[in-house]
Image (cartoon, rainbow, N blue to C red):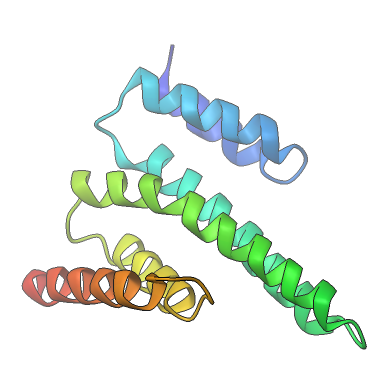
Length: 136
């Protein structure tokens, strides 16, 4: 039940077993829910999955449907990252990496072709930009 060991182990697992890594990070958040690192790393793990899918979608040639599907999956990962990053931000309100990640997600999701996304994520971007301004 050591938070630091769980976070370190999860970081190592990110390269070889992402699902197990998620499990270990979640266990770390249960051990000490008031430390930000496991929360941030969980969010970052999902963001990174989204980035990989976006990059792969950009390499798809001649199959727009497949590329669009991959981009939608990437957006799903971005949405999965939000609650973890928000929790990390609650713990450390002015952490630049967390605020930047949340703003970048908002930018990406504001262009998603679904009802209400532009307004919702434009507000989210403004919220975290305002918080960041207050931290300076």
